[in-house]
Image 1 (cartoon, rainbow, N blue to C red):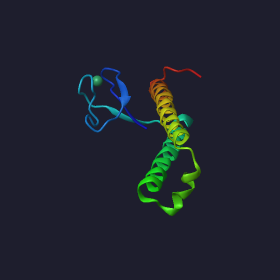
Image 2 (cartoon, rainbow, N blue to C red):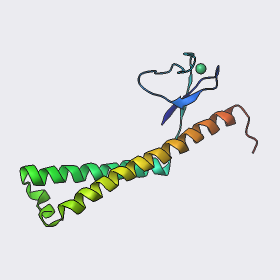
Image 3 (cartoon, helix red, strand yellow):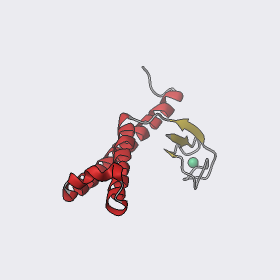
Image 4 (cartoon, rainbow, N blue to C red):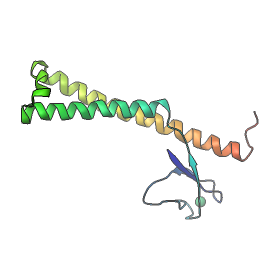
Length: 119
Ligand SMILES: [Zn+2]
């Protein structure tokens, strides 16, 4: 994930398209910092991918009677939908944890660069 750090006001946050490289607090220039995603972020992508695949299979079976999704005919629809919602909630939870981890990692990278952390 890409973060931006403002040397003027010490603001650290994830970069977004709207604000680009500008600091959101003081509109000054920021320094870009790349923070690797945590294991929770990777898990979030996998869980989201499974949920999307399940939605596609569900629509293919219900609306288009697609052969590759015909196995869903033997699956309880209520359980399938519940499982799908469970995965979506899990993905949100993982994204939340990942954001906390990457925010902390971005802050640590800045502290290290400034020599605040002695190891
Ligand atoms: Zn600033």
